[in-house]
Image (tube, rainbow, N blue to C red):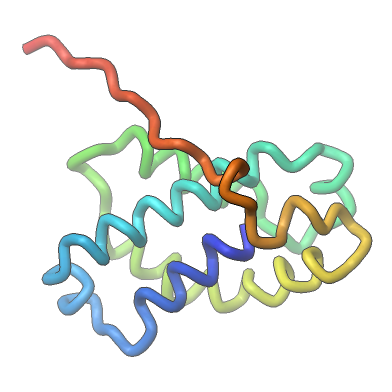
Length: 126
């Protein structure tokens, strides 16, 4: 989770929203990393989540669900608020969790085998 958060913050550092939107590859990478952060949150055991009440687990997972399922209806202003307002506040909590004894493996950078693989999307009928 920490790694995905850091990737988003690095990829958007010093950018205005318009610049992010103009760089399609960067925008896609940011959305994907936000999605993966939420996916990683779903895999954190309930008992670990309970010991970290300052982390907004439901909102992180909910953001992942909206990004994964909204397709073309993603509200960019909400995503921008997550990037610029919520992630800077969340990151210290993730770093503390990664450094501490509260399930550090769930919050430190993933190994290659732990990075979520892209999901295959079923074709939609017209």
